[in-house]
Length: 597
Image (tube, rainbow, N blue to C red; front, side, top):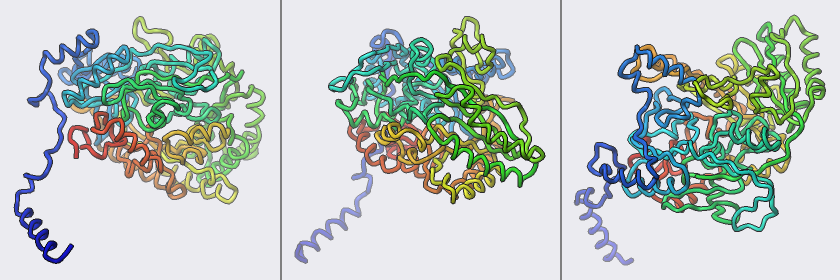
């Protein structure tokens, strides 16, 4: 460019600078709310109701009964029901997590399509897109971060889509793979339904979640771990095929041969982000003869003794438990207790007891320093009955709570240990992948010191089944072919620090979240996790169990896979119809998902 041309161009730019910027700026894109002029008319909603066979529901939150009459018997009954995950799951106006202090509180959508099939989902997706509505999808409704909750929205509620079909010779559409055993489930299926069909009735295994009431679709899309993932790998890695409705209203099949990029993104890229899943087909495996566990609590008599206890357990874990048999948890607490709540597969009772005996012998040699607070329970049962409430009850194994509502199915059960998360309000929740390198001889002391320091602040949980180091190579390679942060493949455990309170809701006297304790609790959780980050600084976090305020969530959840996920999002949902908090593409929207930024 010559000097004269440059000066002309510069002058033009200068003149443009004098014009109001608003003449050239694009207007922000807003989704409509009920108070906006663009909200669909009654006739439009009627047409949607007709299109979904009369399954459009005007949603009302059961919590409204308490807001209008907090002292009533109905309000007291509600707070009893809010400790029942089946009551919550059966109600489109509430979610299993009731909220997060200083973040969100559960609020109902305006309308919900109680979807029965993919066609209902298509109608809802098209209606939301054509009318510029905020859209949200809910199956199990477990999300700590409120991703299945959005006020002023249209809800796709998949609870009733729970058909289950077993296959002896499944081949994904468009593929020429060898036939294999599989199970196809509707996206509203929760895991106990799947386990009842596959394990209790058919004597086989499908990798799912630990909590019985978690939705299958949400767990798969977030990666997904169950008690036996140390052997079978992530639930997402067992996905063979998905039926999903994308933002353009098309029903797509996603597998390794058809829409493979979408298929990959659905395996851990986050629920409610790339489309509305209507059906999933999962790999089915052979079932070992036995499953069981080890449960006991040890209390140390002093801080020094507790340091030695932690150090001993880490060494014992590395030498005896760091393999594909053992999963679940160890808890390290400020009162100098170590709680063992671990499970295994493929071992009989004698084998399980023999593995733990050296650790119990070590404790017995220092009985003045360590007290086992309850007799260790170590043993096995037939794996086929792991999720069989009738068998467990007959054998006096008190491990489940039951739905107390009149007429409730006897299959409506949940683990005793999961009761604390039913209807809770989160104060703080953080997770961190703990690299297996910390188990090396020269690093165990460093790990023990970090766990001790963290336990001075709050309880720390190590979930061994949620780190795949120590798993079979097949499980690790399958995990590498998902969207999850690759750090999971090199982690021996997921560390979790969390705090919260039982059912509570803003504006209800005597039932409100305790903001002062909640904020203090959140700060405590963060300080505690900081001690662990000192030895695992780049660990990342698990998308389903993490901080609502996660900084750099893109890297924490997905690591190097985020860029690829962003490309898939742009391809299948370029206008961001599907929005969830801290989901892929959410950075392009306001925190509530209503305004494009």
